[in-house]
Image (cartoon, rainbow, N blue to C red):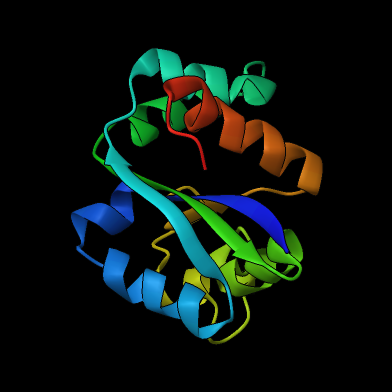
Amino acid sequence: MTRTFSIIKPDATKRNITGAINKIIEENDLKIIAQKRILLTRELAEGFYKVHKDKPFFNDLIEYMISGPVIIQVLEGSNAVEDYRKIMGATNPSEAKEGSIRKKYALNIQENSVHGSDSDQNAKIEIEYFFEKKDIVV
């Protein structure tokens, strides 16, 4: 079993579709082993997205991610990172496959409802960033 990190983003929590997203996750053989609803601080969001600090969309991304509650999750499955990336769909919802979370629920490229780790290494880093360092061990 492997693990991946997921964020259900503010656009999804505002529309009260977290249950529908969790249902898709669970129907695709991923287990939600940790989940917490939080409001990201600017500091947490900037630290998490620091790889994008020099990109023109950075400030808009941070403002969006602190605009409302998010659901942070640890998902587990036989190939969690790859499986969740398929379930999420392409970043641009117009390019996402039918049945994917982003095809079904994303509003646009930024408000695309979910984030998921892009590698096993980043999954470990992202899980530690939000869970282990906050005294929530999974």
